[in-house]
Length: 121
Image (cartoon, rainbow, N blue to C red):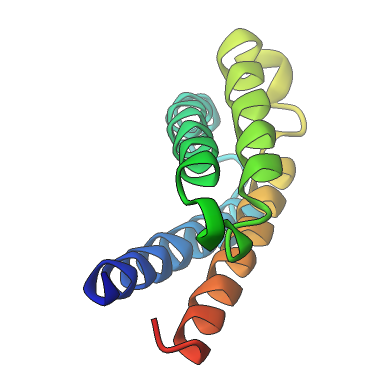
């Protein structure tokens, strides 16, 4: 079980760093393939939202560490659906809004990894 949490922590750090880097790139260069980024992010947000919601309900007592997952999962699902339904309308504010969302989520995930390390998981 300890190995599972160690693996989860490592995966969380990797995903968080990737989304952090992607968020920074989107803030610096918002015009780079905006429509393609819109569809890719829609897919990623939907998958991430579903995963976070499932994880929130599946973990039980360990859900204390993942207490923000339900809210973040629902936000990710909403953003993912908006990106799929109105990609051209969303492109106006997409780069900054999604980048900020990704930055916030990656900070929460890094915090989670640090808390899990403190509890020696």
